Length: 303
Image (tube, rainbow, N blue to C red):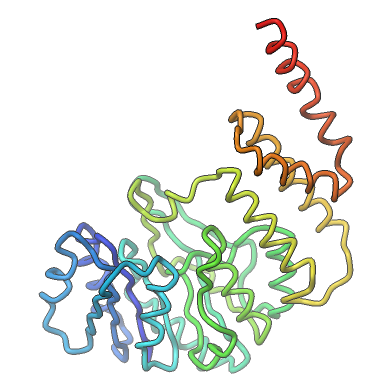
């Protein structure tokens, strides 16, 4: 059985379509667990209007936060396989069947993902640069040196038996799903199905759109990729020039954001400069931002 966990918060606009996309699946061996994070709209009423007994509705007494709400649904699940479906996304009619077939056929695969489609404010196909069976350790390296091409929570299915690695870590905001994917991939392989099995909705109200590229989140990105992965928490590999380049790109982004947005948080500026010095990137700092600093100083003096 597949447990489809649908976390909700003020999801009245889209929750009906999300649930219906599960009910019409070619694979009917599933349960739906809706975990409502103390919504203030009529999300619960819409959810409870379905008469299918496979739908379990859980209402949190208070808002637990995004990651803990996802975890709450996982803890309530009974399936051999688990899928997170964000309440504003939609599954293709055969998404569960095709994901289940992979997990049934490849016992070493712990995580299955697929291509995705955009719906809503955007349109188009989201393709991964890789497809088919990928060794877990190789997938980790490719993500660390690249980006999260595995996909959003709605795009994956994972084995319940792999939850000994833990669940979603609320410590992270921007990287909460990727952190979980990489912990899973330390224990087994990844399979990317090269066709779109989920439609990922883009709209102004979604949680991911509220995670802006602020300097605090760029700092999180640095901590996530460098403090954890560089210290070999997930995969043992020697220092690599690609990882050094990634550090430079992240810190350069931090500096650019800080100066372009006239960052006034002195503690945050101090931390960014400390990282620049620690990574021996002071000359990069002067080359890119020396003129801006001098201009700022002169402007203050003449003003």
